[in-house]
Image: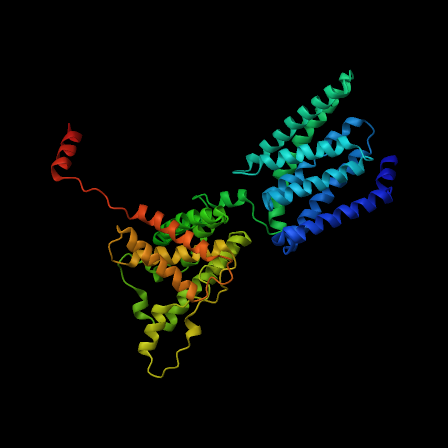
Length: 443
């Protein structure tokens, strides 16, 4: 009864200070984190995690022993915000939570210091997370940091209460354990509830054993290899201009999954065999080609791909013209009633740098593969790639992607570097040397 009474007590000064801190946090996000401010899901996630930590702190504060202050798992918010949003906002929220925790424990500065130390170590531990086990490691790091913090605080105060010290250390260790369990357990649910994509999720999707990628390899091998090369081109370019290289690579792997529905209608998978477009009208052919975007979105829904990847699938063709069949339709039509809009993708145009990079990498790989000129010439490859990028720029396909002209120049140079490596000239071994090598292998 006493515990429930304590939880129900309203401290108006604390409430006022809490509103002030919330106002300051909102002001910071609005003026310095535009992407977060404009995303209601991210705002609700931040608020939910703050409330969760403060609620846990309030419950823990009901218990009298002073060492219970080290049990508040403030790092859970720091870690999850870092993984799901970014490091900068996680650091600001950590400071915010530290002040609120001190208010909950009657202005106890040790509570704020412990919350800040645990949160800061949690942020550092997951700044380059590669797999879910890194969340466990982050919890372990929080435990170690709190133990060191508690030991240092004890030495500063010259206390001889070893029993309380041991209890404090135990609470610090439990804190890290709770953080690891909660972070690992909540992450997949938060990703689904708030429609956010963590680097952990993206790394899992990039695994070649993913069912969709395995299907692509077996049912549409040409498209699979095209996607891998597009991924290499796009990832390197994204890294060079500071975009999300991991999202770009994963988006490239899945951008053409819609071709799985009719793989033989795409040149990637024809391998010099019969072309079914020879027996269909240009209008129908264009409709089939356009449909791979819609089909890709349906498959993405079926396999629960995250929203960020779906956006790339939907935007990677923009509103581009399917020029081959459009020209063919004009040539065959005698009445001149061909609508250009019937031969354009439905869009939208790329809304992010990552989607725009994949659009450019996609057209670059496909167009260069179809050309029969000498691909060992660096300057010729660069001129060809620059021409493709210029065409997309003139078509206004990149208007909404936030790419600058400087970014486009960097992207072209990055593409050329990768393509030069792919199409580099191989040394032709002399026949005599080949015979000697064969002879040596037979001995």
